[in-house]
Image 1 (tube, rainbow, N blue to C red):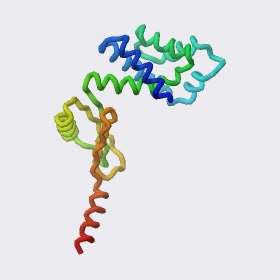
Image 2: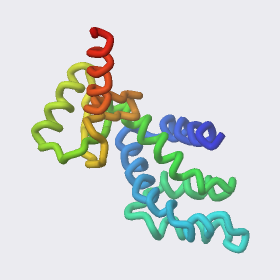
Image 3: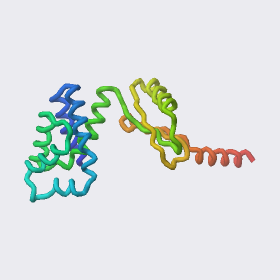
Image 4: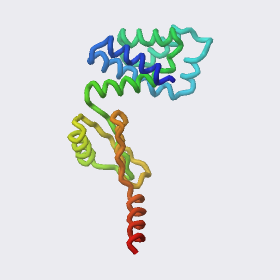
Length: 176
């Protein structure tokens, strides 16, 4: 439900600003999203003891650069009691900006850190295949293989050495 509401706000933003302003709004909203993981921040935003203007001022105080479009959006969300939707709105806005700019960001999950050359090579090959600009960053985890995830394209490509071993064993057993 919250995603549908967020999409409406994003659609209105896209219609009301040009691409440059949209990128500025997107980066401003993105800067505040980590604060919403803090329980104290969420408590303040849903508190009935705090006025709407105080909630908006509180959010503005945590942001780096706030232009009139962002301030108006915050006031509008505050008036309708929807300030807690900011992370969802930010995510949807990033998604739409990526579509408009034809630039997508993703992650490469691997068991070991990959060199910048390898990550750049993967990004370039995927960029050619999908006719878009793709930026990737490496995330080291306990995954035994390599997985590429680009959420804005709905793309997930993975190679797991455990899965390869299992399939190879199954193939050998079938051949016997």
